[in-house]
Picture 1 (cartoon, rainbow, N blue to C red):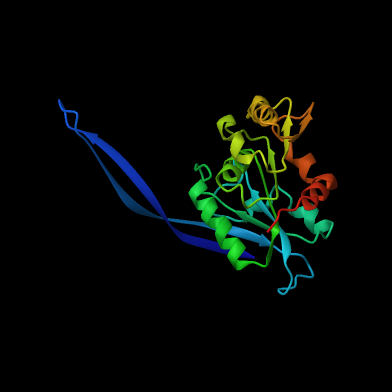
Picture 2: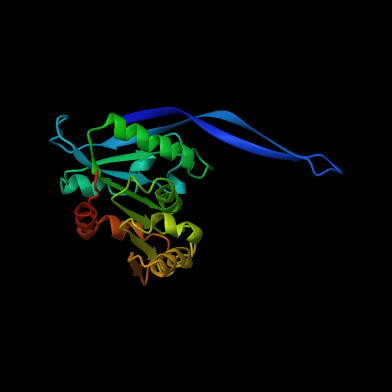
Length: 234
């Protein structure tokens, strides 16, 4: 199923001005309304029942799948494995335009939208993404840590200064040791920052893998077993 999210986000902008030669300072704030939108793909279990609540995997694609054709979003990721193994989960996957990084304001609104529109078990919402989507996974988790029962970023780096925001989220990261696009250090810096906070993140490094560390990851039942074993208090 293909859908489109349109949402209005209100941003508060504060500006500070100084009168030259004087110590007087002034400040004003204004609200700016930004319209955000994205197409997204929904995958539901074969025996989907509107009366039931389902675990939800939110998947963020890489840069190569950006655009306005949702068929691209289905190229990589958890879709085929989940369908073949008939896992009782829903997957939603938004798409970002070509040449644009993930808009975290948009993703935050997207999360609220799907939680409102779909029969989701709020205690089992999971976030994963590859490459550009791996970066988005770290960033969105830091923005909305209260939502996710677990996250699985793949070959995408985060900001160590944000580690404190996600230290309570169960996390399993993946990266190729020979990645020429996103250095392994982008992930290990985050893992080390979390360890230093007393967190216990999991990390899998594929010693012979380059940038494609997602194919092996998304074709491993252990990932899904681990995700579904993580549950958050509603």
